[in-house]
Image 1 (cartoon, rainbow, N blue to C red):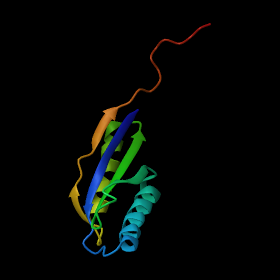
Image 2: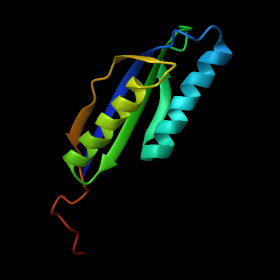
Image 3: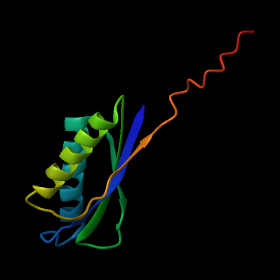
Image 4: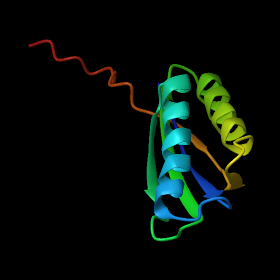
Length: 106
């Protein structure tokens, strides 16, 4: 099992108030979740009107699959017409699959 995670740091130049910021962020969060079935949420920069941080996490059987999904997440964010992707440095780690070889036989 492999786990990928990262934070999209975004500039929202068209967000003039909290309502427009929420609309932009919510739209991207929902689009990413629906398309890739990953965990995604606004995770930071709530106090800045024209900035947002969106955290994502995904689990898959192979590192290649996790990397593919995270690359696509970055592309989706980078092509969003209402947001500018400032930073995206995802990480992939091998997770514990729960099979440590010590099965209890009792």
